[in-house]
Image (tube, rainbow, N blue to C red; front, side, top):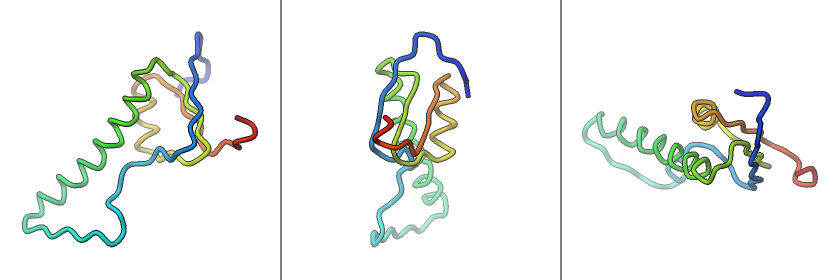
Amino acid sequence: MPTVADGAKMVFLDMNLQHHRIAMGVQVIVKDPKEIENIKQREMDIAKERIHKILDTGVNIVLTTKGADDLCMMYFVEAGGLCAQRGNSEDL
């Protein structure tokens, strides 16, 4: 992850940047184990789409008051961005 950003454009978020998971209480019945892999892949794709929508605005630094998991951090690093998580809202 970069440590210096020239011409930085920042965004402050009050949301989790974690991969999307199926909600508790939702029952998914699958007959083929490949379907489970497809479900997991779609969960990761949703997170990737969220990150790319943020980065497509021209932002290269994201500060969030909530968490960001390793998968989302990886997407930021691949795009050359910087993400800081669990910042105090008063500090932001």
